[in-house]
Length: 340
Image (tube, rainbow, N blue to C red; front, side, top):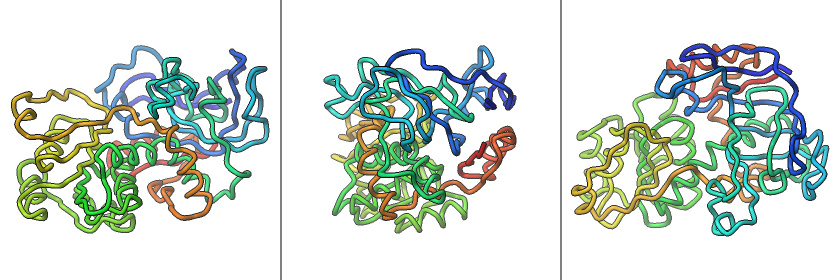
């Protein structure tokens, strides 16, 4: 099969890779009708995460089941399924509490490489959720978004306790931030502030439910959020970037008693203990338990009540994955869809 492999920072190649095989009786093999590039894939692409050896890329996936292991009971060949970036058994005590991304038997998906034609999914019964039938082609981007960025933005909104009567601010205008706006709208937040300097992203944020756009960053951005919220700060802030600047902007934009849902993969973030202590701000986040939300998200997408697939603003053949990485790195694209 063909698949994308990162050799070093800035060096992504599409090459022949061995077809995946059933390695454990709980595995499934799926054929991928589309794959995509994640904002978190840009960390190693930019050299901020080290690439020790050629690494298959991609952790977001949907597809048709081709084969299952002998102990797979609920997933069958021919089904269209959605998974997430951590495989989980969905039965352990942590999974049952809704944190499947910290399952005691969890396995990362990234090493399998979803930017490819086929992939192996471990713990198939607990990880994969089937759609009611094979979907129309135009729904595939939305289901693909559900496998990570929609579930991650949704977890950010839930962790920030967005809801009726709340002012929600979203730090970050990538796919996760934009879908955090969509999630806050679904949770019926009263006012949703998208922090963005880029007109196409601002437009999509408004489509998804943003009531206000703030272009300022740092102290000016914090001041603008407070101006909008009667000097108090937002009730709920979604942090969807993962840098020191974005985390501090999120914390300082939150009112006392408010909540920050942080879902940006943290790089170099250090929290000032004394400031946090006196802020009365609650922080909750981490790797999103996407599996918790998949049944609900699949239902909303299947019934065309939401359209998260709009975050894909560039579609390329899988063979041009390197150009997709360049486009996202240069912010020429929000999120790139790859077709085999």
